[in-house]
Image (cartoon, rainbow, N blue to C red):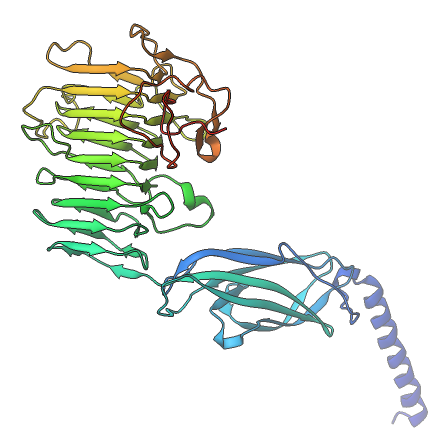
Length: 469
């Protein structure tokens, strides 16, 4: 039998061994894995997470927040929570788990933690956008820090398979969200007051078999665009299918209207025997198309004070007879930030539809082809941004008082291949710089204001914008 003395002695030895082992373990543990109870500060990739305006009942895109521990030692974040708790419209994803409160999150010294923040805003039955604010609160060793959360919510009218079967006028009190299609039936007119905005979901489209009349203003244009407005998507190509006018459509007017970010902005095929405009584009902007800005086959078009730019396949194609008039238009297609091929000419006037084209089966107008381009700018980074059907003996194409990117310089009344010196086309500012060769080079017409509503003088400038000192 062991003596009590031995037991006591051996216990002391064992205790000493354990203490020594713990001291050795602590000495061998890296500093970044040793937790501190000091009042430390975390660092964040941003102090405010802000979302662009979101439609109520539709979730947002995700935003990333990086949380960094700059200290040598590890910390335990005792709480990560939204300030409004379960009442918050914001949701956080931490380690793949969604929630609005997390506890005892460990973060090693010098290490980072990534959180994903999303927001879903409930309808408020309000016409104007409203603000949804909250904060993401972090608690570490009794110290509290927060990151602000900000989003604007917007109530909207949501439509799926929307058919306009009788004359209708829409007001601009709230946006209209088109989830798949908007149809205007034959012999029906849809009138749009200033400020009306349409937001089209992915692959959604507008089909006009009747009449579309949009009456925007300089300060409150009518807008047709994609539904996403955040970051990259604000000016990205091909996010919905665009507007199509069919053979039964007539008397269409888009005034102070913007058509943005579609596959093709406007496709129109309205063959008839007269030359009355089937579509008038007045003070209109068509931009950011994966295909064509305006593709017109056998139609009658009148456009003035209109800007068409950043359309990969072409800005305006006028084919298959028809009557096409463009006055004071800016048609610009620089491809530094998107691909273009030499055959993707910006502006085309052709009597016939190319036979190898998928458009060859469409009906064309019965009257001769007429094209007119006056007081306009056609510019881009190809050697030729204009194609004219000069070989036809039945077509009549008049091109005068323009600035053109064109190797055929035979028409003496135009300026050729001189940079128009836009203010900054990279950020869509196509107003004229003070040194632009387009200033005072136009001929007097009945168009007395420009796209911004500014007066034109007796010696007007070329393009959609009159130079303002």
